[in-house]
Image (cartoon, rainbow, N blue to C red; front, side, top):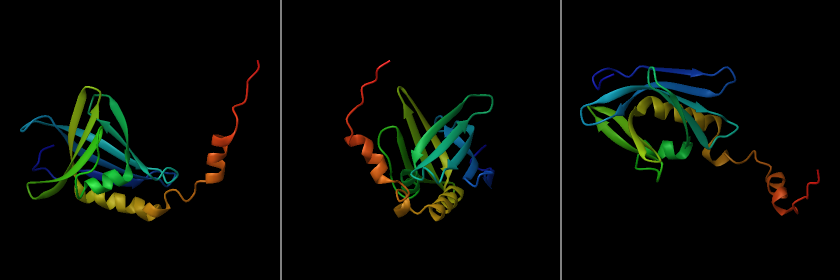
Amino acid sequence: MSGNQPDRQTRRAVSDGRPELVLDIERVLDLTTRQAVRAEFRFDPDAPWVVSVELAVEGGPRVLWRISRDLLHEGLHSVSGLGDVQIWPSHTADRATARLQLTSRDTAALFELPVPPLAEWLADTYELVPADAELSEIDWDAATAGLFQEPQAHCD
């Protein structure tokens, strides 16, 4: 995949109604060398604050990252993220792109993503679960009840 080739992408909904976006993106190895990578973005309305991204190189292993949906969305327009996940807008060859850097231990990988299909897909996820409703389904009484209980001794 080169900068002159249009991005091939497939947009679909998984059978259980969870939105998925499959994109062919590029890993930036240096100024002139890139590697084609398949990226599968998945959104689960039951955990709306996170997007799962599975990255796969042809013939190589698959790697799963969970990235904040808000961090991903903000990074399409401005620098977003600290530490292991960072994303920022970048424009190359008259295309709106974003750079995604993933860091784990001693390794870092830099990817270039096409903004239009990712922005449209993220907008669809926000239609399913708006940003202000992400935590509305949590039963806070039940979630915090265990915090205030005495630990129980276990006898075997």
